[in-house]
Image (cartoon, rainbow, N blue to C red):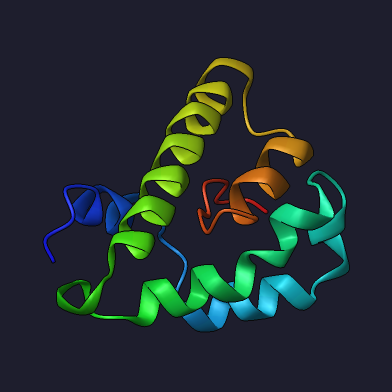
Length: 101
C-alpha cells in the first residue's frame, strides 16, 4: 500500500522509536496530554520503525492523524513559542521541536 502521508509523517515525527519509547516512560509525558494520547506512544514507535512499504490502511490512517496533530501543534509553537505544554504535547506525538528542552 502507498500512503500519501508517509513522507510528511517521517518528516514531522523526528524522534526515533527508541526515543519515543523512552519518552513514554518519562514522567513529564503526563503533563499535557490525555492518557489515551500517551497510550498511543508504543503504536507510534512501532509505526515509525515499520517500513512504509508494509503499512496497512490502518497505519496510513494513524499516520494521517499524527501528521494533522503535529502540523497544528507546530503552528501553535511558532505562534506562542515553545512552552512546556506545547513541548510535551508535541513529544507525545513523536515530534521533538524544542531544542533547549
